Image 1 (cartoon, rainbow, N blue to C red):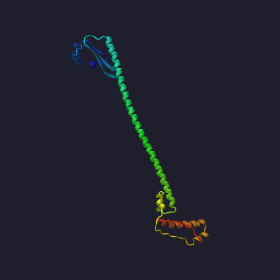
Image 2 (spheres, rainbow, N blue to C red):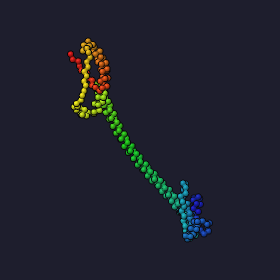
Image 3 (cartoon, one colour):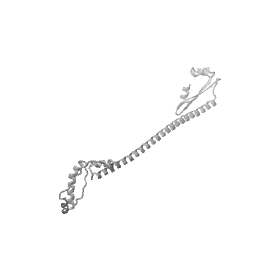
Image 4 (cartoon, rainbow, N blue to C red):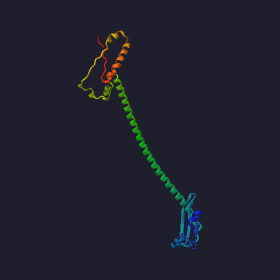
Length: 222
């Protein structure tokens, strides 16, 4: 009976259950002392939600006013149930959106933290690169006068005072002079004299730097 009312979309009224066909609802209703039943389906355009069942102890026809009242109540009940479901869905969506928003906020905070860390790393890297470039430039300037090994030692000291402390060492000092260089410079042009010195330093400097020595140019004296 419930299914038939739902399929038709119309109320079904039975004035006397004792004259109705055998079915489970009749047995239950009669056993409870009810002899007439009114079934009003809860349906709308979206589908079937259920049925309203009105049981009455005395047998007899249901008045059109009662049937109309139950039909109106059924319509209101369907609207209430749909609204309740819609409210539940909206509430669920709101919770999901709130959860997603919280997740996005957490990810944004984590991303900001990673961005700050990256900025700090870049700043530290820039400082290290700048320091290394300064050290390379310092070594390059020192290598103009010292052996590469000595220049590296001085540059790596990073300003430690221990490098300037007094030390007792055995050293070998070699003084070299170019025979006739003074007379040569008196008659030669300055460019010619500098070319000779460059050739001399290129040949002797390779040996000096190989043995980690230091080259010092001394002015010639009469």
